[in-house]
Amino acid sequence: MDNKLLNIVAIALLVLIFLFSVLTWVSVRGTKEENLSTLISYASRLRDSGLYKQAIETYEKLLEKGKLNKEKAENIIYTIGAIYMDDLRDYSNALAQFLKLRELYPKSNLLSDAQKRIVTCLEHIGESAQAQRELERATSVGRTEEIRPGDIVVAEIGKRRISLRELDKAYNNLPEQMKKQFAGKAGKKQFLSSYVAQELVYDAAVRAGLDQEPEIAETIENIKKQILLQEYYKRNIGKEIKPTESDLRLYYDAHKDEFEGKGFNEVRETVKQRYTEEKIKEKEQELLSKMLQSQDVKIYPDSVR
Image (cartoon, rainbow, N blue to C red; front, side, top):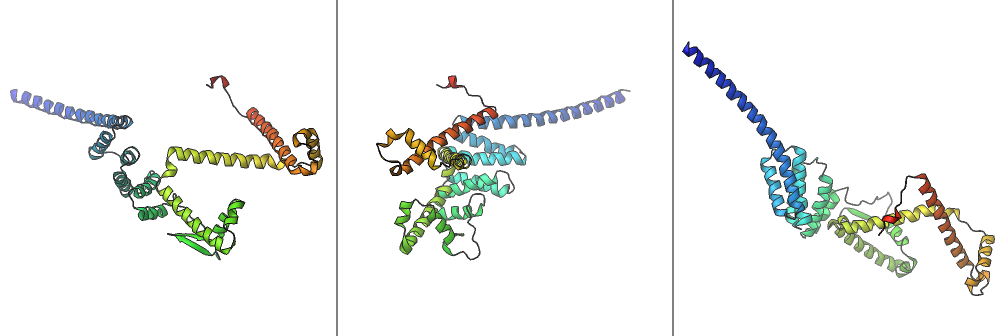
């Protein structure tokens, strides 16, 4: 009887030990998941506090021991590279991280941006030729110019070919005064050299990541905005303004004192320019008023300080 009781107690203890082990494993697993999120947040706070090396160390420990899923691992490798590049300006170590990301996760959603950063890092460490090759490899970064059948190629920059058609287009976009500087066959040859030089410098600027710097990116965006605004007004307002001779004469008569006694024919072009500018301003106000009425716009002038 005593032996049976002892056997029952022993079995019960074994069952309890097994259950405890299972519960402990589940608890530890949950704790690991919680610790993982906590450590990632901790590393992020270290970076925000300017403790970049400590942040990198924490991220690297996570990669080494965290048993991360693919998405988390990609993000952490990319983040380490970004810290080296953006915060520490250590382009060699940054390059190593972005190359690691490309090698380990060739289908990563971060690869497009990582490729741009690879180009920038190579340029900063003095590997311009390799940076150019990477620029050409990254179709989302590099520029390609269509070469049509029959096009005459006037220059090549790596794999990029410049056609006479592209050169003529660039020449025709010059201000009239600059066109005079490159007039004639000799001038056109000089313009070709100048154009190629500009393209080389532009490529170097892109490889250096200048277009990604916040202030420059903002300036580019503002210029783009102004061009779009002007084109929109031109298409929606400018084409409506076609002053007749009668309109111009009436405007001249109403503003005679502004033309210092000069006759209409003497100042006709000036009259047309002023008349058109005033009408454009009127049309702009009309257009803006319609837009303000048709859309949900709230303006709080009292909040301006």
